[in-house]
Length: 419
Image (cartoon, rainbow, N blue to C red; front, top):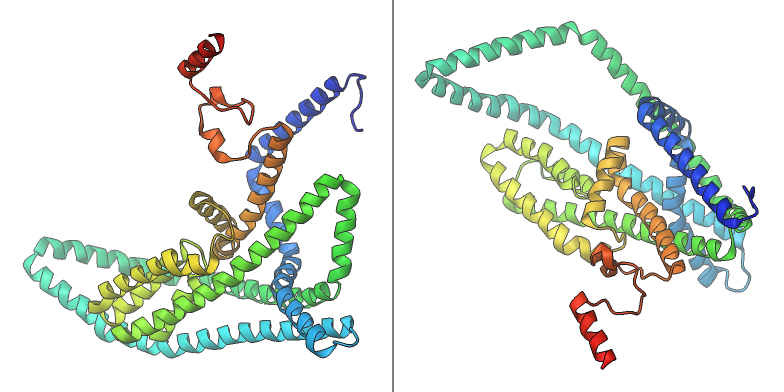
């Protein structure tokens, strides 16, 4: 074994722990003082690997569809003679068609709805909202001359800001052009990722065999068996969470549409789409979607804004307490604290995408850490149940099966034994 310098195993173990502690400390100090450089390196690596990341995500989403098609063909079409290659090709084609159709449906639903509502939003803003605000300001200023002076100064500041904005228009256009190029690059990476995902699915069995072979070669039997069990469980949990969240958001979008029609709200389809799509983001999604939608309702019909906010609040309470738990259950197994933690951390690193994928990814990390901790506790003959560790620290470490008693009770028991 590595680092067997001393003849005594105890000294070798101490040496390994010491080296690990030194390396960990150096790495931690480097991360603290060179954090910006690490972020740049990490961002560069992510940018290079973006097509591969896209391919992994798309292959993960397409794999259940492909497997369902293969099972259907094996059961009803190729009953007499199995044709795995033909079934794989048909399964990949069906999964690709479903994915492309879903993306096309989202694009063809959202973009025309936005374009068709732009004139209405502009008319409502210029013909209703601005006149109403101007009327209110005029009425207020007539009774408050000092407030009129303040508002006039603010308007002058806004005018100066607009002039500065026009002056800096050229740099803004440059930034816009850069954003267009970034979007084009993302589209290119998505296309390459989709093509690579098809190759992933074609070579799925071979890649799985290679990964298992590598894991078996590196780890002991008890370790790699646990790794296989954990990966299987997390794969099922992630799929259930992702597809369950999509179904949940679709139902919420439909309920929102029906509710807005009953309440005769403006921009029914546009608002329903925004609420449904942003609902995919755990916890913060409803708030992210409700803010721009409230502004749209405020511009179109200010008198209905409060009713809209109340309706969205009731809808999200229904989703969070009734519909969501019914569909998703407790597939992820994270407490509310860790859900918020995952959303905040991954959201700060990857934006909106990070807020969506943060919870399932952190759930995988959490399961791995939990499995390692439970294994080490079992090796030490210690309980894995959380309730055991809620007792005072001085009592931890007693034998598993030995009941924990207070000091007076222990004295009484000793006295009875003596008698």
